[in-house]
Image (cartoon, rainbow, N blue to C red; front, side, top):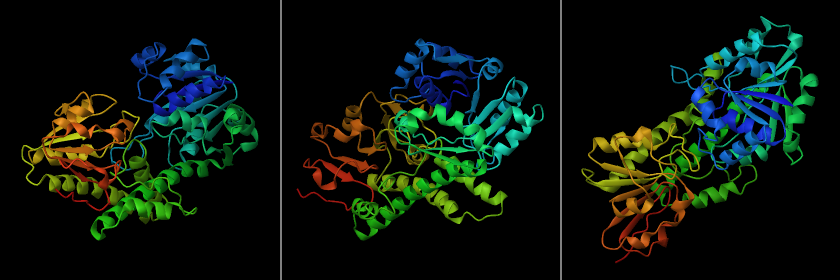
Length: 435
C-alpha cells in the first residue's frame, strides 16, 4: 500500500516508520528542510528508543522516503495521514487547528484519484467534518473519504505501543468502503490480537480525548489520596495496591508522584472542557482534574522548601527533568514550575538527565552524571523515573548529611542503612532513623 504521512513529529514519524516496517511504501513529508535532510542521514529529531535503527533499516530498504514535496507525495499515495501538531491555541485551552486545515487545503488541490484521508492528529469533535468540507470544495465526495484514526502512543514506549496496541480505532461515515484498506495496513497488528474498533467519525475523535482525560483523572486522584496519606500516616503504595487489584479499577496510572505533564494530557484535558463549552455540556470532573494538577506543581515546590528549612544558598540537585522517563520532552514538565519558586528563594539548582542538557534550563548547572548530583547537593530530588535512578550509589555519601526527596517513590523509606541520608517520598510515612 502507498501511504503518505504529512508531519514528521512524534506521531507522524513513529507511525510512518512502523508502517514501512510492515512492508508498505511510506512517504514522510515535512516543510522543515533541515529535518528532512537529517532524517535521510538517519538523524532522528526526537528521543525514542530503537527508532533510529528502524529509520535506517527501512530507509535503506527503500520502503521509507522523506521529502518536502507535499504535492507529489499526496498524488503518489492511496492513503494520506494528517499527523501535524495541534497545540493549545493562544487562549491556552482550545486546540489550534490551523495546521490541520492548511494541510486539508493542500490535499484538496492534489487529489488525482480516490484517496482515504486519515486524521491521525488529536483533534476536537467535528474537525473531520470541517476537513471534509474543505476538500469537497474542489473535489467530488466520491473521490475521497475522511477518516478519524487517533493514536494512543506513549512517549518512550511508542514502538511497543504501535506494534502491540490494545485497540485500533477507526471512525468513518463510510465504513463499508474504507474498512478493507484500513484493515489491510493494520493487519500485522490485528493478527497479534489488537481489537479493530470501528465507529462514527465523531465518536472516534471523542474517544481520544475521553481516554486521555480519564488517565489524567486517575493520576490526579492518586496524587490527592497521597496528600491525604501524608496527613493521616498511611502509605499510598498500599492504597494503590488495594484499589488497583479491583478489576473495575485496574492498577495502571495509580502511581503517586508529580503533576501530569507532557504533550498530551495538559492540552487534551483543556481542549475537552472547551468542547464541552461549545456544546453546552458541563465537564466538571475534567475541570477539577486540571485545577488539582496545577495546584500540585505549587504544592511540591512548597514541600521542597519545607525540607530545606532555610533555602538561601542551599544546593538542590534534580535527577531527571523531563516529564517522564525515556523521552527528552520538556513540555509541561513539573520542574519548570518548581524551579522559578526555588530560585526566587535563593536556591542553587543543578540537574542531570540521561537525555542530555536542556535549552530550557540555560540558567541552571547541568551535571554529567548522577554521582555529581549526589556528591554536590544538600537535597537531591528524584524527579523523573529513569531506570538508572533506581540503583543509585548511596555508599558515596559518607561524611555529609544528604536529604533525598523521591518524587517517584523508587525506594522504600525504611531501606536506608546510611545514617547520613534523610529520605522523603510521596504519600508515605516518614521514617526517622535512630542514631
